[in-house]
Amino acid sequence: LLGGTKTIYMIANGLYEPNYYSEYYAAIFTTVNKFFTSDFSLKANLISNIEQDSFIFTTGVDYKNIKDFKAGISINKYFGADDSEYTFMKNSVDMLITFGITF
Image (cartoon, rainbow, N blue to C red; front, side, top):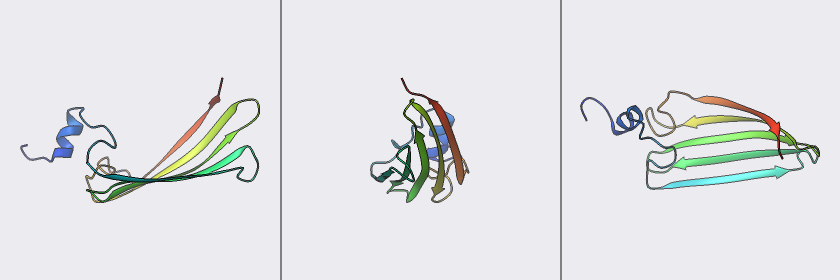
């Protein structure tokens, strides 16, 4: 590798796949159903790349009603050194908004 890191090489050549970069990972997934009402659920998740000491913390709220309409919002916070698995894009926070119909 000339003037780069293994991570940069993998990303530049389309070889990167999240959560398959290192050998050891740890994760905690939690969900609270019936959050406020029976239609809402609250989630909080943590995934860690142990070798690189980097993390993704995700929290969000999902809504699903009796008519199978579904909506949600999630916020992802990334922790770790620069150019680690979860911080290589220089993003510290992002948000995902979803909605649709389940059938």
